[in-house]
Amino acid sequence: MPRGLKFKYADTEFECKLNKIDRRKLYGSVDVETRDINGNRCDLATLANDGKTLIPYGGTALGYIGKDGEWVERAELVPVDLSGNELSMLPSSFSVVIELQQRVSIEQFLDASSRLVYLLDTDEEIDPALVKELSEGSIFRFDFLYRESVAADPAFFLGTEDGLIWMVVGEPSSLEYVGLDQAAVCSVSEDKDEDEAVDEFDFEML
Image (cartoon, rainbow, N blue to C red; front, side, top):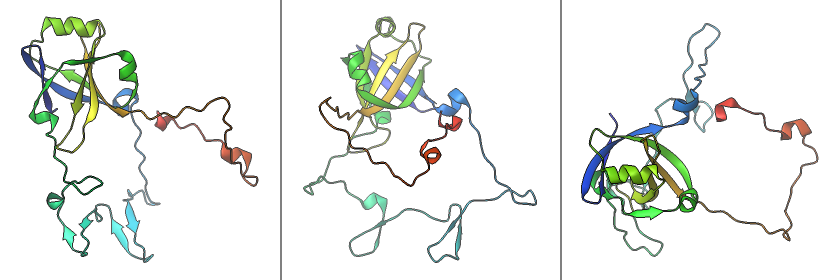
């Protein structure tokens, strides 16, 4: 069941369920299944560094090792800054009420690279003033944390004229502009076949 976020606009609070929109929902998907000569499905395995040990799928995991070489539980880890000072943890957005106060321009919205898109759904009545604002193009910005962490991602609350409400989670874009008087550096391999240098178009990339 989709998780819900609680929002506050003016003096009104309401809860919205998050429905993630991904490429599979937009374009569909293709699953590739590998079978052996007898038609049996093949399972993924990892060949260990010794060149002879096969590790089945799910047989490996990530862990944390301390300076003394001993295993460290994730719950024992403490976030610190570059100077070694302990950082305070920020609460998950699912455990607080998000106030819709900060309005941003469309330029500020486009300055962030969107990486997650959610269609918001609610059974509660939304303030007509908010519905009107969203239909006229207002965009609200707030900090979003899926789980407790030391840093938040910029998130945007916006709507459409037909009443749909969206939440877009992104990250600040880092663009470097090159002036016309700057020379570009190109590296071309002489022994590479020209056809190999052209990437094939893959519909699964859509």
